[in-house]
Amino acid sequence: MPKLKPGTVPTTNEEDRRIKEGIAADPDISEMTDEMLANARPASEVHPEIVEWYKRTRGKQKKPIKTPIYIRLDNDIVEHFKSGGKGWQTKINDALRKSMNSQYA
Image (cartoon, rainbow, N blue to C red; front, side, top):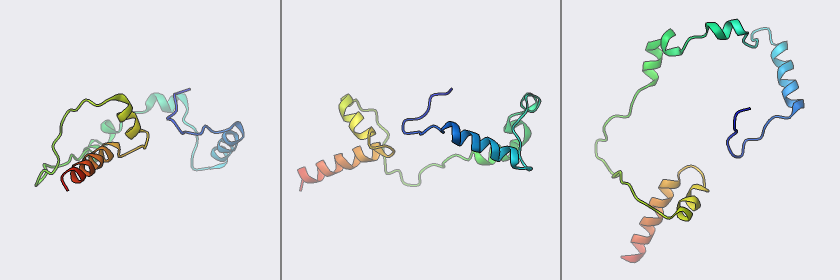
């Protein structure tokens, strides 16, 4: 079984059974057979134009407002900010700004 992301709650056997019953009862869907899996091709091979459309990249910033840097921080500081989840780099930026503003106010 693949490793689950932290916080992921695995399904119980009862939930898994109900899901499989729902799949079996749905006339519009079925589980893939070994033959279907063997014939599967990547989306980029089947519809390259759609994949290309989704691969849009960000354009150059009109007025860059952030400077990418490399900084070494103590592990406990990084872990503290990462423990808050997504946006941890923004939180570090905010903490530095707050420190800067209070120091020079």
